[in-house]
Length: 153
Image (tube, rainbow, N blue to C red):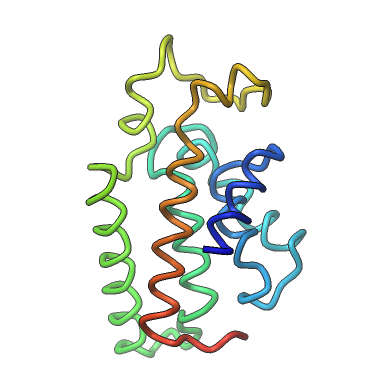
């Protein structure tokens, strides 16, 4: 659960949901925190504020790709295996939150969802459920690492 705590802390410091998940696993990915959060920076707000796939989920995919992805474009079996893992992790997130779509996850928030990032204030953190999604994604990755004993880069 160390990664869950790291992800929560990063989110509470102001990193977006994708950055929080990727940043929590930066050591396992073999990159600095700065590199991990930069790689994930465009995925917040459901892909740059578009409210599509939840940033916590795309951050989870980024970690998965770094830890168990393929780099040979003709490696069909590796691609097939990775895509199956993506679907598996997606389903685990969906079982907890019923969707992976940012706008659907935030449907109960008052007012209209904005595309631009919002200032991180006490009021933001009081109403925003995103920390739960960050924690779920980090927890799913922790389980995945434990189940598969994926080597650290």
